[in-house]
Image (cartoon, rainbow, N blue to C red; front, side, top):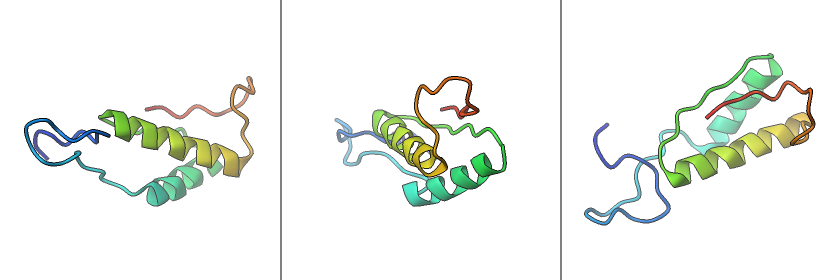
Length: 81
């Protein structure tokens, strides 16, 4: 990895490209779902506005599949970016 790898919505001003996505959303959903089902906490490194947005979508999909409601309080949803 080098510079300009942050996954961005807008193209970089000085070079063609939007950065790099290291794992597909589908793969992240599968892995985070499995970890969450096993009672594990997940921490994911994300750099760039698009990377964080995409990861939030992934977390929301996993929460939906697991039946976790946002803001439910007292739950065990504890994953981190």
